[in-house]
Image (cartoon, rainbow, N blue to C red):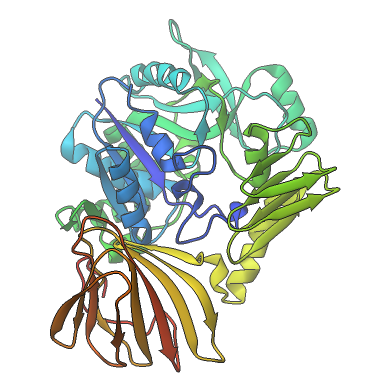
Length: 473
């Protein structure tokens, strides 16, 4: 049986300001109505003979991942990494989880943030790879190149298999220069390295032990010590053991050393959505080769990607640019230089600015909050808070701020210093500084409130959780 393993641990810094650490690109709808994670899961619906998926994600994304899978009714085990360690360890812990359920499991490893425009072609080549994986090969899906791309690694094919559209791997090549890339494409013997794989879970672990025994040992210990640490839909990997694991990719740790590597060519409209220019290339564009989303007006503008999330964006006389507007940041970049957006994110991190991690709308397991207005000098902040039906915030208190709550939709159940009461639309309450309080939605429609905070410090770290349904302390 095939066990899909969806790797959802990336940050997607090149797609800032839409992609951020706490809400990365794979959890956003960048191409159509589904998020990239949802699209990855949905394209496997017609894959015959498969087990439920395993999704490997960062612990901080666990509730977003669980909610997005619930929305598309795709059951999955969610394996939580306490810290990112690249693909070799992530696949190792997924392999142990798969073997717990199916000792003959063949892993289909897929990044959560790729676009596949022809999923039927993908599934057909997966079946080719499945046959090889059952023979003990470690299979990579190699993308048939349509241009001399310098941003991808390449796979040089070797001897072909009989009765199978696949080849032994002769060599893996690093990202080439333009001349070398052109020679690769013209030869017809090279494929882009997609980061998609098929292999027996046990074979992978055996090869990992052979070539990276330290990673194998750390992951075995991390999974053994956490296999029964279950929290709702989540499997928590032991933090101490996994943190000590060396970070490495599956390519460097295993594939470049093994003599069992095979490549199956794939021509399925693949795109890794690695930068804004990649999104422009696959988007439906107008006669001027512009892609515009949201409230956009343009004149004498060509070859641009313009995305307005919150307000009107007017573009006049632009060519070959990317313009992305969010509530708290605007990106303007020449399309040929969008790979360097990651350097802006690095500057934000160095300056300890929150725009690298958070949007003004922040998702939580109970719903979300959105900052509407703030002024540190005047010591106030205004938030719009939405609480899902049946959900509640933690029982908490603050050392430095008081809060006023105004219900604008739904019914709120308020707990404050041992007292509980209901509020309906247009009713309000005051939460004094230092009071133990909790907001709950007992109804069947979303609860929306406006929260006005006032005090000497308004940061999110001024929350002392006394009780929490989601284990956050």
